[in-house]
Length: 367
Image (cartoon, rainbow, N blue to C red; front, side, top):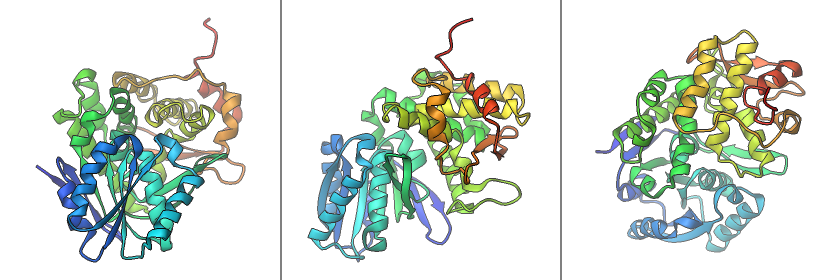
């Protein structure tokens, strides 16, 4: 059974959650579209062929394989896509469909946002991470030498197809990594997610599990609620940080990703980043001991890392200072004042930042 989650706002669209959803593409793209550029993760060629076949019933389809992972999110790849669209004569009535993980979604969304200042795009996320994070909300971007997602645009999709069948071939490590963003949603907005993780054996969290489907739906609902209230990250109301809440744990996470050349999976880095900011909030007197400690317990329960030994605090602080949440020279962190109570901690001292890092530092010699 297919579930439909509606995303309101100035450019409303639907997120469909179900199985065998390729047949829904034409209904989303519409009759005015003539040509479709299918941008897919290169390793998914066989699955992408089936999507292309479904599209070919109604459109002139041109498929482009992209590099794997963050290697797709570069200026050079974006230029190659723009040049290809130009050679094919893509107009504003044509469309882009993405098929792949978060990197494919980010790059494809950015290409769609910037070609002729915006053409229709439909996302078909194939990883758990992309389903609950990159595909919903309209954020697009590419990486630069200075950091992750520093160049981008807001561009809402025409629709999102969360086809659970695509998870069946996802490597277990990638699936577990995606739980990092799911657990994050539990801490910032929906504690039931945490309860489900805590009461379910990790090995039972499989792509065909009813619990997994509920976790996906809950995480997407969290993102929809936050995004609709603050589409362009200008701030929330009544003290809520708005869309910035979705960046919980991401300041350190992005620094770790950049330092490792994106060798660490995003969801794994987010888990470490969330544990770090929980300790930061605890030391700042903003978060109780129990909720802070619960972070490491739940992420570990899901099979995610709770520490990082690949760099020192001094190695990472520079990358944190170019985080998108920073204002001038002041670092700002999304923290919790309690479970599901996100807020901003602005300008913490470097001593406090350094002390909090001990909670995730695996370089420290044992006592």
